[in-house]
Amino acid sequence: MWKIFFTYSDKSKLTVKHKGCITFEQALKYHIRYGLIADAAVFQQYPKKDNAAVSLEEKLKEIWNAEEIGTTYDDFMKSMSAEAFRKALDELKEKITRKEKHA
Image 1 (cartoon, one colour):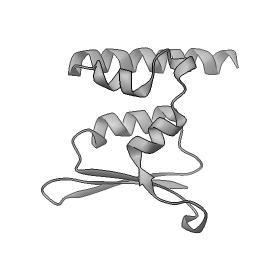
Image 2: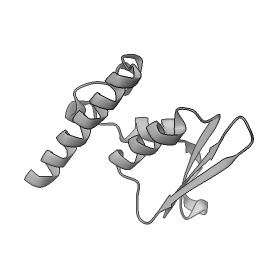
Image 3: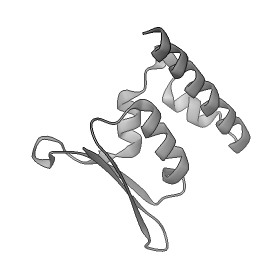
Image 4: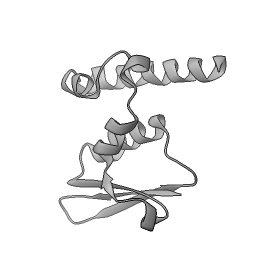
């Protein structure tokens, strides 16, 4: 099981949790949906005793596969306007879905 804890400037909090290990698609989706506007986004894989908490951005960088995606995480984030970001995310989802179907 894993959880992501988001904290915002107004002191509100949001927690997302799921069974198993986080996938690239999940990490990117929650980073875009909730993390980009959060003051903090902390990823925790369970059990805690075996896994240190890390920022969601660090977790995303860890599982980012530049060869599969065609760009590095840093270059991807630098190049994004809101509209371009949504379009690129859709293209990434499509790429991942195609790869999973062929695997």
